[in-house]
Amino acid sequence: MISIETIQDVDAFARLRDEWTGLLSASASDCLFLTWEWLFTWWTHQSRRRTLSILAVRADDQLIGLAPLAVSPPSLAHLFSLRMLEFLGTGHVGSDYLDLIIRRGFEHTVLAALAEHLAARNLVIGLRQLDLKNGTAWRFGRALAGRGWSASYSATDVCPYVDLKGVQWTAYLERRGASVRANFRRRLRQLEQIGPVTFAAAATDDERHASLQQLIAFHLRRWERRGGSDAFHEPALIAFHEDFSRLALARGWLRLYTLRCGDRPVASWYCLRYRDAMLFYQSGFDEEYAKHSVGLVAMGLAIKAAIEEEAAEYDLLHGSEQYKFHWTSQSRQIGRLELYPPHLLGTLCRRTVEFRRTAKRVARSVWPGAAIDHVASLP
Image (cartoon, rainbow, N blue to C red; front, side, top):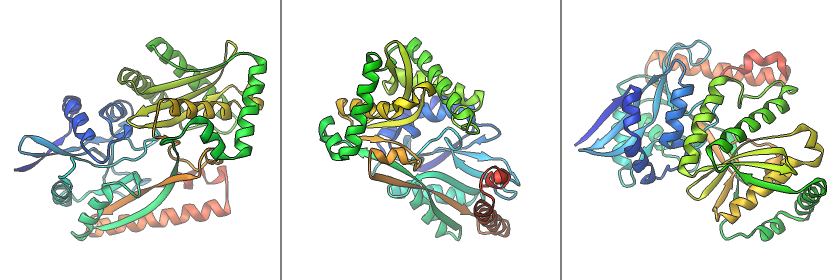
């Protein structure tokens, strides 16, 4: 017998931990950003005015599916005046590859049950940071579209990654070409002429805390002159990373590296090892050492560390910044799926969102920069 439980309180969310972890490992969606540790910590610090609405699908007593969702309140600045269902992990925290979590072999059963359940709720559904090629949520969108819902799909960003399967460090540098290879080696030698160079990950909780504080300080100082960064711009985000990095260290996932030249920290590299992937999440460096390209050196050493750990890939996560493509030519597309219920308000909501996005694109082309901050804040 198939049943769906709606989990709306944090204690029930906490009790799901072991079942959640087991289900995730048995799913095709297994990634760090869908772990209980990441999403429970996100809920603790980033839920804001949302209402928890996790859907747990069971076949008799066996958990076969999770829709890790929350309901955002109505907002004229967001999606007209309807409440919206969205994935946990959405927003400034920077999750990628968000998805439904379904036990392998039960995909059809779970998707059909979720489509029937959510069709009756008549909420706008806005799902972001989805893997365009491999995500399960796209199939869910098609199931609701078959019930008369209106669906909007769009690519929004890319996640560059380095395929490391069977690759040695020297061979990888050779593969990247003479310019990248020579630049990395030259910059590393220049640092070594100043003092001994080390690149080591935090191994204790005290080291973790100190390394995180160093990363935040580097990052904020660097971005001060550029108008700020969304990465650590509020206490709740810093608290999120303090708590999550502690959990990640305990699970063996945390790779919070510090690049030192002599005794001086000159760069911080926030990576996470999950399953066969090394994820590059965030970075910061000493502005006084920018002329030595310490960011380039740290990136190279982090990829080298991933190879030495026999990671299958080094994922640079979302963002098409040019520096990422110095290290790879491969990327995945991520995107957005929006589903609107088949009634008048749902139709008005979709048209309003489309109009605002068009206005945003036009404004960016006519008034680039700070003059369109208000328009650019629209979804």
